[in-house]
Length: 215
Image (cartoon, rainbow, N blue to C red; front, side):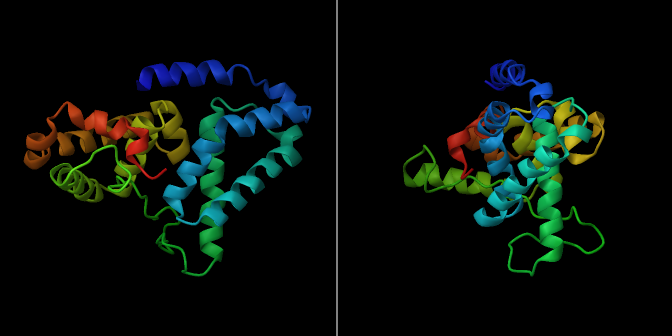
């Protein structure tokens, strides 16, 4: 599923020419927004649980691209470039705003924010008391992962981004992404309760179901 999604995204990326963005062509900007709006909105809402803040940041992001287009270099990955840029805007906003947001910012580390990777029990495609109890346990175990592990799992298995793209977004090495993701999956697979309920092979499937989550 993830592999096919990445192939589709790769094909779609090829239809947007960076030269058209630089030239300020409206059709190219509309295509860029349409293609990545869902990705950016979902990612932003995991960082800041405030729709208005995320939408404002997205608008600012695309305005910045338009205004600075002549000086911008063509990105290796548009998805990675947009996600990283949006994340920076949101972090800057959280640093300058009050503590009304649900994210927790450490003054010593602007990247120390919460990342919500929680299954939505009410909207999950699973019904029944027993099944919801299993989902609750899965949710509990996800919350025990580090923020970085949750973020990487989200980008890799839910959004289908490549390791290279995730490394760019989080400003880490590809090896770090690979090791951190594998460590998170290993922890979930080796959990005896989860293994009994879902089976080791089912963990990755659960992580890849888009409708299983709020965003």
